[in-house]
Amino acid sequence: MLISIEQLLNFWLVKYPGESAALGAASLWALSSVVYGSLGKEISPIYLNLLKGAIAITLLGLTLLVRGELFPAMTTTNLGLLLLSGAIGIGLGDTAFFAALNCLGARRALLMETLAPPITAVLALIFLQERLLASVWGGILLTVVGVAWVVTERVPLTENYPVNLRKGIIWGIIAAICLAIGGILARAALVTTSISPLWAALLRISAGVVSLLPLLRIEKSYFVCKPTLRVVVGISLAAFMGTYLGIWLQQTAIKFTEVGIALTLTNTAPLFILPISAFSREKPSIRAILGAAIAISGIAIIFYF
Image (cartoon, rainbow, N blue to C red):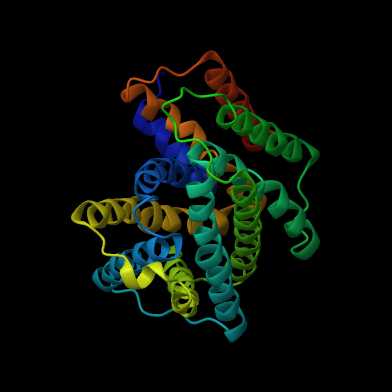
């Protein structure tokens, strides 16, 4: 008996809700990163992060209002963990990533993000006692290697080359560490509470935005930055895809699967850029295709072994 695509998708979503959400977030972040990369020279990282956060908060608030979801009952400890995870992972982490994006370009900045999964898995092992099987560790390693191989490939001269390699590497490492710590803190809160992914996303993004406000005092470009219509539309589109939907899906992934696995799968975003490149008349190379196959093999190991 033949199985329809709809039945296959339903089985996949029911069997692997966390993993499916993580891959959905990765695809949306790939799309939004293309937009953010085109805006990086027109707006500072702090201001960009602040605007995208404000837009996402508005969208999440309206969604919760329409759905009629009341503020969930949760302990002060869990609330504090979620807020702290947002301040570190979204406030500091995303700002550092945007800074790395400006210094390194999208390809190398995404490469630095692949440092987050192993950092996260080690921290989860230490602080959350999440015992990952050897096969899962192998899958994580294989996925990271595949992604790294794709994004480190030499590209045509049309790509913007790094303007400050050392500074970009530092920002990239900071972003990866912040992402890992934010994921650990969020996981610690989500596994012991019934809070919905929507509320978790709203709380984390709100904390991220609030954590940026003191930095505006030292951000000189905040006073002179006058976003054009192109910038506003671009940030709105990217915030809807990457921050509103992407963070929502990420919170779902963290809630329903181990944080090391969730962060590994959400870091497959560079793989989803391959079909985007095809549409932009940039034919993916053999190395890019092989790297994608290696990463997908790692994902299969994580799922089935």
